[in-house]
Amino acid sequence: MEGAVTRASRGGIWGWMFFDWAQQPFHTLIVTFVFAPYFASAVAPDAARGQELWGLATGIGGLMIAFSSPVLGAIADASGPRKPWILGFSIIGVVACTGLWLATPGMENLWPVLVLVSVAVFGMEFAAVFNNAMMPGLVPRAELGRLSGSAWGLGYLGGLVSLVLVLGFMAASPDSGRTLLGVEPVFGLDAETRQGDRAAGPFTALWYVVFVLPMFLFTPDQPRRSATGAVRKGLRQLGMTLRRLPSERSYFSFLASSMFYRDALNALYAFGGIYAAGVLGLSIVQIGLFGILANVTGALGAWIGGRMDQAYGPKPVVSISILTLSLCCLLVISTTRSEVLFVPLGTAGSQLPVTLFFIAGAFIGAAGGAIQAASRTLLVDQAPRAQVTEAFGLYALSGKATTFIGPLSVAAATAYFSSGAFSPEDAQRLGVTPILVLFVLGLVLLPFVRSSRDATAA
Image 1 (tube, rainbow, N blue to C red):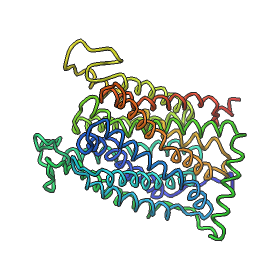
Image 2: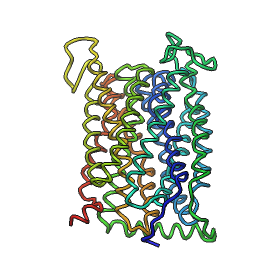
Image 3: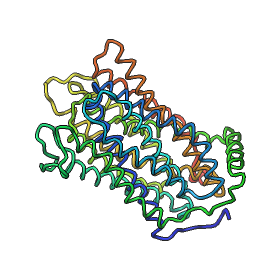
């Protein structure tokens, strides 16, 4: 029934929330703060080339989602249960993450690692697609904002704990052989061959396997429907929705806006650590500290954003977050070891650029947590309750099917500036400018989006 209010058990809700806790280390350890900067600084020939190759690998992973998500999403919607899909893509992601251990410093053939990165993005991101589709059936609409914010906050805490464990006990400086806590790496991990950084892959896989179990055990799933004609039914419904969508201005504008700003945010996370290593010369430990700060503020931002969502609606939260992220992105792009806001520093060796980078990272974490949580509830306002599951599927398709835009545009821009009269540092800095453009596009489209509070005010 469209007006029915459903609520899962406490264990079911916490099981669903623990998926974010289980998956966040993939973004924290692999995509952003440990493995990505390690790949760019130690595996690839140089940082600019590493940024280009990383963009290529993650972009191809997005393309794989783009080609397969419409068909698989439609089939899943027609057949019912989401957990079998989550299980299948989780296995793909776990295997690929485990294989990242093979990325040794200075290795000649980088393609096996790039393929593993692409497959890991494909598996882990697709598992999240189907997990998000389960959210509307867990609590009434009025509580979705708080649920989404709390889940994102829990995810950031999971990323924080995993990052502290890796930096404190596994990843060591090649010079000192000691971790961030000043101890030797556990399990005899060799600092010289960067085994602690490489271990982020298998550690992420193990973490995911352990903490995703509550979702499989306790969270209720959709009932199984008749498999007869599931492909045909799903694709027919998807076709009807896509034909109707351009006439629904708010719904269409939200999908387009969120497509741009989510892609920008994902690219910002993906290249933040690589940028810090190549342009500012931060070590893996320093980048890890930056990651700890971003995860702390991300958890707070998601939690506060969820409460602001419930009090004022999701649209103001999204708008403020985009503005904050755009300003922080501009600050990062305009800062190098010798410049701040494109203005040369008068003294050599100033710590001001690093300090500003950490401040920007804190705000990026907070705004990123808030915008991701609020976006899920703003989507619910775009569709009737009876079609909310389909809306989440379309939201997932519009976002995941274009995840290649940010990484590939950064890769292309970096390659373009690298081939000109720019230094590798300037090429890497200018290469991330497409991220700022994507944020602006998302902000321009947002005024056309209406929320339930707008309808009430009208």
